Length: 272
Ligand code: HPA
Image (tube, rainbow, N blue to C red; front, side, top):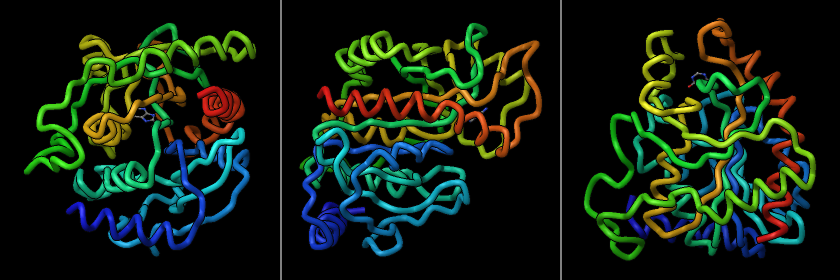
């Protein structure tokens, strides 16, 4: 993907909408309810946008929502792309590049994740404080897009400390229950992990495991976009609680947590 590809996608979107988004939001599996809080102005299908991949997962709609959330102009991705779908990392992260070029100043991300930390419960929200990538490759592989960022971007404070603090304050003020903080690890999937793998992921320092988010965050940080990210704990992956996880179960739990996530994200956007 070249910068010209990105600019073409941006021109296409700008021709379809007058919204100039300040915040970009990526909605995770079963977590698109936040879109209902957006005062929608325009919807653009991914398949219409030049160079945009098209989501192959049924639980992910593939469209860009442009509108207002808490009076701020936002762009939300309803449906994201995963490595296991067969896309390369540049394709997965193309929408983040495009959102940055559309003018966003912050990226907010959500995902569904398995809980590794034994203090976590179903439908908890985990504010991501750091990550471990176990993905086989990296979206910055290849020649550096120097117009967008530096060759060796720093990953300290990848998840912005002020945004984390703000989220904790909002959770307290609004009595949002079951809000945790922790480290997110990304695996390629699409199979879930073996019990031995869950144990390993916990030992290396992860609190939740999923199959997304890190590529988008790396690209956002490459472009110096501040990131705020939340995992919804949809299944428990530690001894004593581990059981077969089906997509149906994961979606049910994600649905339960969704009002909490929506409240938190809406407040975060309002208070930027
Ligand atoms: N692993 C385990 N459980 C999960 C995952 C995962 O990658 N994603 C959502 N729940």
